[in-house]
Length: 95
Image (tube, rainbow, N blue to C red):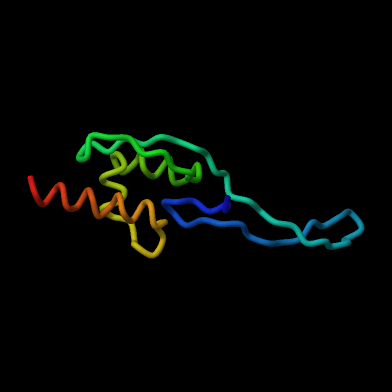
């Protein structure tokens, strides 16, 4: 599986390990991904996603999955999250 957050788009970054003697070797900084289940109030169902800890805090801050996806940019979302966003928008428009 890819190490990319489904909601924020955060992925691995690259950098250097620097020893005391200033020897540099390449390394990867991986995002802090967690498997979580988020509930949509509009659709009245739960979704399992792999998201970063920072994105999870943002979801809580914005008031849930529905509010987060309403403000989220489509370019950052995964295809699964984009489908959920469109389903939520369709359900809110219908009723």
